[in-house]
Image (cartoon, rainbow, N blue to C red; front, side):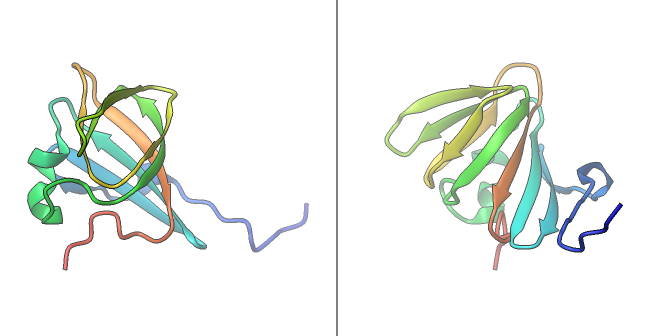
Length: 121
């Protein structure tokens, strides 16, 4: 079998999580793409667990992700609300709050360019 050096792999479960309150993330850096597994434990809410770290009133980063467990509730700046259950692919624009819905943790896998996910200066 031929080896192609351009093929890349990472194992998210082997990456030490970055934890902020009830929200954790594991990021794998591939060439030009960051793949991040985010878990909102039961009761987790961005505005309670990450707001002080991000130093913004709402999450101001866009997200492209697939929900792999649980349900994520999202409210936009304009008041629009939507739930994203397991199996949904979601595109979230900047200006939102998000939380786990119900009594099951929500996990999603996010794809982005570069890992500026929750960086604080």
